[in-house]
Structures are given as structure tokens and as C-alpha cells.
Amino acid sequence: MTNTTTLRASGGPNWSHRLKDAGFWAEWAALVGLIVLVIVFQTLNPTFLSPGNIASMLVAAAILIILAVGQTFVIATAGIDLSIASVMTLGAVVFGQMYEGGHGLGVASLMAVVSAGVAGAVNGVIVARGRITDFIVTLGMLSAASGLALILSDGKPVTVIDPLLLRLSTSGIGIFGWSFVIAIVVAVVAHVVLFHTRFGTHLLATGGSPESATAMGISTARIKIAVYLISGLLAGIGAILLVGRIGAAEPAANTAFLLNSVAAVVLGGVSLFGGRGTIVGPFFGALLLIALVNGLTLLGVSQFYQPLAVGIVVVLAALLMRFQK
Amino acid sequence: MTEQPQVAEQTGQPSGDVLLSCDDVSLSFGNVRALVDVSLTLRPGEITALVGDNGAGKSTLVRCISGIHRPDSGTITFDGRRTDFHSPEDAREAGIETVHQNLALVEDLTVWQNLFLNREIVRRLGPVGLLDRRAMQSRAREMVSALAVNVPAVGSRVRRLSGGQRQAVAICRAAGFSSKLVIMDEPTAALGVQETARVEELVFRLRDEGHAVLIISHNFAQVMRLSQQVWVMRAGRCVGGRRTAETTGEEIVGLVTGAIGS
Image: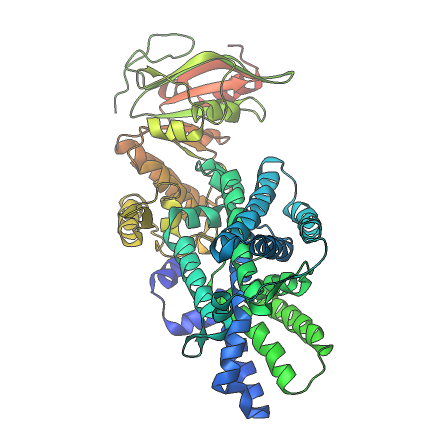
């Protein structure tokens, strides 16, 4: 009985075996889905894969990718960051206030990241030390950060026209806009952190089995604080890109970013129960969601149908993965 | 293995060298007196069994030795030094490894990741330390093949292993890193006959490699098979100890139930 498992497991990663592994499909579901979508949309509308449209999709995906990476870190520890989009809004508003106050791009960017990072750290400390469920803490922060953004901005948007900031979304390397390049860098660093550092292993251990992690001397509280801090800092980077993209710092709710960040992570095959996940998966998950919305727009489907489509795709993906296990 | 005739002490207290000794260890949780003046000793190179009913304080005592709890009073001396562990890490540092009843493995991590959990081998690249996955994998292969009979592939996830293989991984982890004492909390409780035999073989091999082993077991036949020394706990007290060679299963049962007074 044990021999069969041993032989199979030590047989190395042959492909027919890997293709039967549910984990393999969960990991690559987003990429497979993306390819299918691309083929469908390209057949229906040949402008879909035009360089211009690809470039605009990638720039549009940049913020979502960065948020999805932050969300992945949190979800891999079996938590969830419902405040990620509000914290990004807070960062954007802080950016706007600093910029309007004449502090220049550098200081404004730094303060956006710092303020978002502080909000994330507050999440982490309350979750870890206060021992309150992630869901409740970040739900509170969702409201608190939105409120803070409204208070700081007095509810008014601040126009930010900065040539350097504008270039983030208008120029880049070939079809890769600078904001997408930043997103790639964030994703690569996140991948290295998750799979090639002690912190990453401890993070997965904390998500997979907090008791075992504690028994081996890992401070799960510190890991929790760290992942929420990372999520906050990434929301801060997202805030800078957001201001650059819309040319203004608005105290808007950005609910779609929250839902899509969780959706991208789910599409990416990251377990909501923690302990298992990749960066590649959510990366393609984010691209898939952007391609879906973009394709529907190209096909002339009313904007009202887009959230419906996103919802259906996410739930379908989750169902598929469930059945495969 | 030395099996000297013991001085006919009631405890069967060994007179030879001592690896670990607990002296009057007490611990209360609120009003519950979990441990009351527990004194016992462990010899190097021996398998020592700790038996007793549920709630007798076995696990609590083990948790004191492995640094999870701190005794309210009394001393624990390990390897000639008085211990003052503030965490399981301190105990591991001193050479005491514990195989917990739940094994403390992370299902979604691989065998080698579990073996090196919180002891990862890292290559320094300036300010950042990157995991040396290759070194850990090959070292893990050595650790596993040195001990286990049913070798699991070090790259497979623990989720895919059988109960016996999991136990083997947990024991290999405890045996590695030059530990002097390996504590096992009911290592075969959830295993079938064949797998139990394999784990027992593993316990013998640990001892032959020079580790002292402290084993909690409810299986008296197993205690008689494996151990050289037995300590019996009842209601938070250590009510007696025997050299296994000089006692019988009935006597141990009597001590556990209280039918035989200490």
C-alpha cells in the first residue's frame, strides 16, 4: 500500500502524471482560461490582438496585478484583505494632498506608500495581536480608510498633471507600458520572496497549519503582520499608478478593484484556506479579468453586463477547481 | 545496551549517568494542578516510556521538557545543565526534539520543506538570504534514507504520504540536527499493525544511533517491547518507575490504575 505511493511520488514529474494532478490545473487554470478567452475574442473581433489594444490591456492590468499580488500574500496565510482598495484610495488621496501642497512627485509617492503601509500594518497588528478575524478587521479598515480619504480630501478630487507620472501609462518598452513593467517587477520579486526565502516558506506554513508552524518555532503573529504590511505597501504603489492613470486623486470607493483582486487570486488557484498558492496564477487571473472586460467592450456589450460576466467567470472557476479535487 | 541489576528501589531509579532529570516539577493551570512534584530521570541511549491514564499529566510534563510550558516550581536538568526554556526553540537549541501527537507537519509543503521548517539553509546574497533548495533537498534525502525503511520522495507533498510515512518524516526531523533527546507523544496511536512495526523499528534505530528517546504510549505491550525504563503517572503525580526488564505488564497496569500503591 505505501509502496505504490512511494514509487509514484519518486517517479519524477512526468507529464501524464502532472496532467492528472488537480493542483496542476488549479495552478494553470487562469492561463488556460486566458488563452481560451483570447481565441474567442480574437475570432469575434480581430482588433482584439492589435498592438494598441494589447498595450492598453496591459496598462489597465497593472494596478490589478499589483493588488492581486498583495491579496495573494494575505490569502496564502488564510486571511483576506477587504480593505486593499480603500487603502489604495487613501494612498491616492494622500498623494494628491502632498502634490497639491507643492511637495513634488517623489515626496508625494513616498507618502502614498507610507500611509497605505501604515494602514496595512494596523490591519496586521489588530489581526495578529488582537486575535480578531481577518474579515472583520479589514472590513473595518475598508470603511475607516475610505472615511479618512474623504476627510483628507474634503470629498473633492485633486487634479494631478505631472508629465513624469503621465509617462507611466503612456510610454514604455514596446507594447509594455511602464506601469505594466512595474507590475512585472512586483510580481517577480513577490515570486522570489514566496518561494526562495525563509519568510515565504514560513508564510505558507502559517497559512497551511498555524499549529505546526508555531510548534516549529515560527512566529505566526509576525508573519500575519508582515503580510498585511506588504498588502498595504502594494496598495500604496497601486495608488501612484492609479493617480497617474486617471490624472487625478479621487476619494472614490474603487470597489471593483477589491472584488477583482480577490477574483484574480481565486482564478489563480490560490487556496482561500491558506498554505497553497502561486504568484503566476493570480498574475494570469488579473490578465484574464482585464481581457474579459476589454473583449466585452470591443464586442459592444453594455458596460452593465461586465460585472455580471466577471462574477460568473469567478464562480465558475471556483466550482471547476472544487470538482477537480 | 547495559542492563545492570537495579538497587531494589521502589522507583527503579537508575544509578548510572543521567541525561535528563525532573525534580519536584509542579505546574497548575488556574485551579487545576496538572503536575504535582514530579521527579524522574532519563538515561542517555535508552528508550524511556511514560505511561498513565488520560489526564494524568504525561503530555503536560512533556510540554514542560520541550519548552512549551514553564513549570511553576521545581527544576529540569538536561545534559548536566539546569534548563530554563522560554520556547520550544530553546529546547531544540539544547538538543531536545519533540515529535508531537499531531506531528506538526505542514500538509501542503514538501517533505524536505517540512524537514527544514524554520531551519532552512540559506545562501547570503548581500542583504538578502535565498533558500538553498538543492542543499536542503540532498540533505533531506540523506536524513530520510538513513532512518526510514519506507522512504518517501523528499519532493512529494506531505498530503500525499501515508500515516506511517508522515510519522517517519516527523521522526527524521526530530532525529536530525544532532538532537540528544527525542520525545514522542503516542507515535503509533493512529497507525495500523504494519506501520506500527515500522515506526517501532525506527525508534530502535534512533536509540542505536545514540539518541535518548522518551515515549508516551497507551499500549502496554509496546512499552514492554520498546523501553528500558518505565515511569507511571497518575493524577498529576509520578507514582512510580520500574526497569522494564524487572516488571510486568500487570504491575504497570496496577500502577496506572492505582490498584498497586506507589
